[in-house]
Amino acid sequence: MGWRGHLTRLWAYGSMVLVAGVVVFLFAFVFYEGSSVISWEFLTQAPRGAVLGEEGGIWPAIAGSLCFTATAVVLGGIPAIATALFLVFYCRRRRVSGLIRLVVQCISGIPSIVLGLFAYSFLVRDLQWGRCILSAGVALGIMILPFIEVRAEKAFRELPVQMVRSSYALGCSRAYTIWKIVLPACRGELVSGIILGGCYAMGATAPMIFTGAVAYAGVPSSVMEPAMALPLHLYLLVAQGATSMDTAYGTAFVMMAILLVSNLLATIYARRSQRKWKRV
Image (cartoon, rainbow, N blue to C red; front, side, top):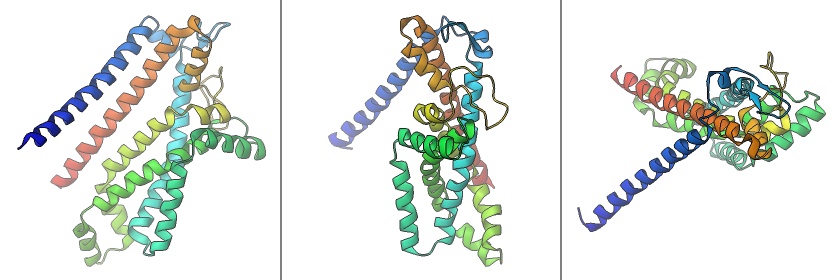
């Protein structure tokens, strides 16, 4: 290995250490600033007081964020996986596949605030759904659809062709092959992509502000109700100024911890699923 190889390796290791250091510093700084308010009561109680965040906790915001995320995952993940299956196993015309990919790429380039404005104008105002979880879930589902579709299509195309052809050679139908071989083999990547897409949706503030997130609300009982959300709660706390910064840092750390744990679980599940399938 010449000097270029050593330089490239040093650059790669240095970049990895730098990124890891930035992430660790960010978590440590946010935790240090918000550690004074983080407690069991902070995680399980509703906010109280004349000023938002003055008393109580953020449990309704956590529950609301999970509801927004689950709705977005259902509304965006199902059509994303269906689109990937169609492109890989059913579509044989290049023009059709190129048109679908163009649409997916265009959706991925739409700013989230524009999706929020569209959902507000069409769903909240014109269809009169009102500000609710479902209205926000539609906007967030559209936002994460390209993310999940690209990962799902990549997983399907990386599946060994011999497995699919062997199933066809044994007389199995295409639908049976997809349900019994393709989806189980790609389950880890699909679940990982859905979880990561949900993490992406959980941090999107703009669509929630327009469509379903509110400052004060209890734990929602249906998708037709508005709810609190961690990104909006954090935004309002920071907007209030210095009096709420400790609570803002505590809220930020909770949201970051949820996203980090979700990402780690997605990665671990994907790797374990791949190893299990390869052993079979």
